[in-house]
Length: 94
Image 1 (tube, rainbow, N blue to C red):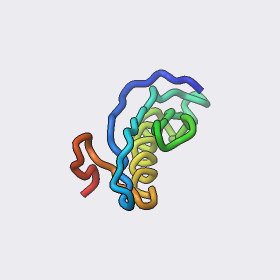
Image 2 (spheres, helix red, strand yellow):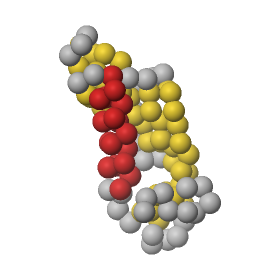
Image 3 (cartoon, rainbow, N blue to C red):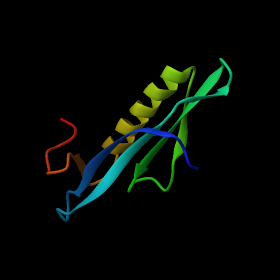
Image 4 (cartoon, rainbow, N blue to C red):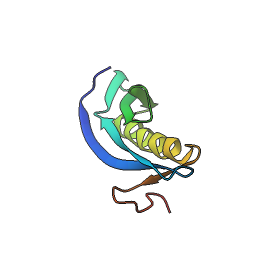
């Protein structure tokens, strides 16, 4: 699935056991209506974590975007034995 990417953020994913890190990239696409004025979707991909992009749904375009951002935070916080970092090593989450 290709999508119209509107924002991206480069981060590191540090392995707490080995101490190594890998680059990951959060990509958020342009929200779109799937059912006019009923349901909207926003594509999300976390390169280096997810196999491919998925759609996250909301009741309108802003809701779909908010749900996509919430999804990213939840996914990154749930990665086992990993810490998400800004490039350079500072923790991304407090």
